[in-house]
Amino acid sequence: MPQALERAEGSWAWVVLLATVVTQGLTLGFPTCIGIFFTDLQHEFQASNSETSWIPSILTAMLHAGGPLCSILVGRFGCRVTAMLGGVLASLGMVAGSFCHTLNQLYFAVGFISGLGMCFSFQSTIIVLSFYFIRRRVLANALASVGVSLGITLWPLLARYLLENLGWRGTFFVFGGVFLHCCVCGAILRPVATSAAAETRERPPPPPKTPARGCLAACGWALQRHLGFDIFWHNAGYRVFTLGVMWMILGFPLPHVFLVPYAMRHGVDEHRAALLISIIGFSNIFLRPMAGLLAGRQDFAGHRKYLFSLAILLNGLTNLVCTASADFHVLVGYCLVYSVSMSGIGALLFQVLMDVVSVDQFSRALGLCTVLESISILVSPPLAGLVLDTTNNNYSYVFCMSSFFLISGGLFMGGSFCALQKKEKQGRQAEAEAAATEAALERALTVEGPRSEKQPCTEVMYVTSV
Image (cartoon, one colour):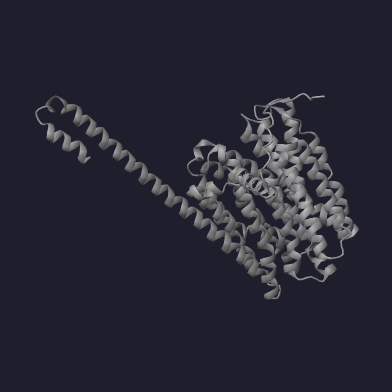
């Protein structure tokens, strides 16, 4: 029996927005609490910093890299089924992780399975939200981003409480039950009546002549459809954006992973150390929606790229505070200033991408950007862990490393965007001068028209030389 379609901008759209807020809190907010378990997992498996860092690395990388696969599932089964499947996978991964006896098992269960499930749930809600909200899309995205801040605020507090009472295994088991709420949120995602939803399925392609050629053709078609390699090659602005984001991501996630162990190593109480991450999340509850609304204003349309570069630069400079002092009150101030730049990066990231590519290319450009971004996320924490192992757990080098990638990435993007804008401006001036010259020649030809019979050779020679 066919189900009724919901109306865009209707009352159910706000229920979908609430489900999106909860889902983003459960998925995007979760990786920040992994640092709470860092020391316990090291002692449990007698592992180095680099080996333990692979857990949040793989988890966060899958959260981003699964985007193209999520798009395929959404196109085949819809957002509701994909989001509920993601909740089941995230739950199974955490429950399986509570029974793991080696780090490799934990990499696969918590990192791969749970990370992929979180990706399915998170991206499905984002996709369906764009169908439910059209006129109020900027407002909806700004409100949905509150879920990330709520997750960053609440996950560390819940993780610390459960860790003290149940240990890390019992905590992961409980987390498996918590992630089942993604299934409830997914069930709320009813299909919406839009032109995109009313499209008929494409007919299956004709059978290939040979199985091998058919598989290669299918893989090539999928890559071309969901990953914008051609955009990367031909669009200089998108190329600068993607390379800059890849570079700065090598430093951006490090404070989320290493801030808590850094504070604990310098004598900060476990509860107060976990509170530092919650301060970042709580500040973002208010800062991220404000930044999102400001970023959506047309007044900032021409300056968003430079504001994004400035936010990255400020984020990198802020991390240098941790190299100077590990006092709790100093770290609280660091978290507050860090929240400002973090909210700016989060609010401007997709807005800048929308500015450098056209609307019809956005999904493919986003797919390639998230896949390349996940490579940096996968490498960053283990690389920082290797730095810790080689420097006898000196966390100052980790924050210096984070600052280096962020500052250099911000300077690269800001300088490159400025150079591209200058080149584009010179190109427009050259086109305007050429158009003016062509118009002047046309006027001259029009004026000289009556005398063309007296000077036929001169007239012909004049036009040919231009």
